[in-house]
Amino acid sequence: MSSADMQVQTGTVTTSIPARLDRLPWSRWHWMIVVGLGTVWILDGLEVTVVGNIAGRLSEPGSGLPISSAQVTGLAAALYVAGACTGALFWGRLTDRYGRKKLFMITLVVYLAATALTAVSFESWWFFTFRFLTGFGIGGEYAAINSAIDELIPAHFRGRVDLIINGSFWVGAVGGSLLSILALNTDVFAENVGWRLTFALGVVLGLVILLVRRNVPESPRWLLIHGREREAEQVVAAVEERVREERGGRELPEPAGEITIEQRKTIGFLTIARTVFADYRRRAVLGLSLFVGQAFLYNAITFGFGAILTTFYDVSTSDTGYYFAVIAVGNFLGPLLLGKLFDTVGRRVMISSTYLLSGILLFGTAWLFDQGSLSAVTLTACWCVVLFFASAGASSAYLTVSEIFPMETRALAIAFFYAIGTAAGGISGPLLFADLTKTGKVGDTVLAFQIGAGLMCAAGLVAAALAVRAERRSLEDIAKPLTAVATP
Image 1: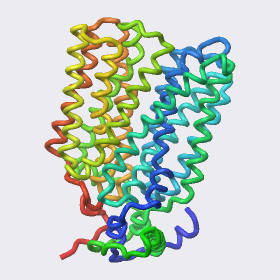
Image 2: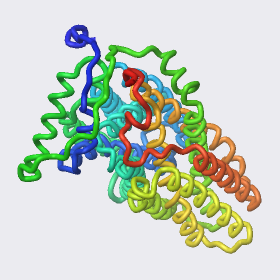
Image 3: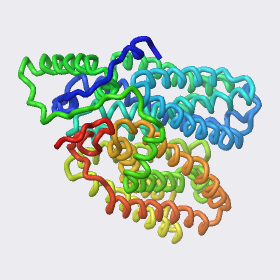
């Protein structure tokens, strides 16, 4: 802890800072937040897709790495998932305690270092170690970034911005698919060079993000609660001045209300756990349902994606990347085109409908597949439609857990539900769906689809009953801070 932190004086303050942030019109400053914080999801999509696509090349004798394809898609993938889950929980607690900015800078540096060291792997143990550490950094990003974005973006835009940012994972997936096709072309790059360059590109993009991220301030909401209201005031005043200048000097709307805070330097872990799982148990059930439902649907489709195309439709393994790029585009279009409706039509209607629609459509796809009515192209088209809705729903899971719990618990709550969802999707999901899709039996693959669809529909029903009407409401109104002083 720095000497400045040690000198922080806490007390009881009444402030309009949250309301001042929420009433801001959209501006170039908000775009800077989106670019500096949100684009890390593109890197995650790039990472995950590239590793899956280069598995075959890494196992070849000339790759420069003694490793099998099964080890890349099995052990290395599991280690990445384990690192992400561990990192989310580890960094999530620190994010709530030491601030959003410190942690979103540190976690990006961890990601960059681990990715760079993956690119120069010379032994399999080295590759596995730094896949774990890459995941460790990415897991921390999810907690720190979602917290900061929701606390900096005005309430009227929070839903659509959060959905599009989380959905941008699939922009990285498209890039990863296309990049792999180029990098693995031995007419362009040597066998032991191309796969390393794919990781190196991730480092270059991450460095650009790091430079932009330096200009992103600490969350004024976090500063306020932790006894640093003077810094919070300086941040908000500077933003307001920039927005006024951008508007040609026009005055901003009046903020709607104040809140009284009893500041604390730290909040105990037991207090946080009791708040999330006892005081907000219905919301905890909602978050758990949303994350597990989307995790299983995605694994039902994407885990056996290549195997289904090659086994049932004789698609060449070298061509599966094109099919994946197509469904990745469908995934991104969902949050992009539906995101605004989460702020206008509302959270409950949109979350429940996207979950239920994607589940029902996947049941329909399973039936058509069982009847032998689909080709590789039409199956991919069906997946695109399913994932158009599923991606908006899955992105809304991150939005939901980042806004329905008190601010002091936000990062750790995101970390917990992300870790549970990632573990369910990245560990139990593949173990279940791998056995079903690798048999080559139509009935087994249909069952995999039906399991994913069933859990997605179940989560949609939970959302219909429990989803919080958080659209266009301040975070403090959705869940009162633990430090808030009750007003008579």
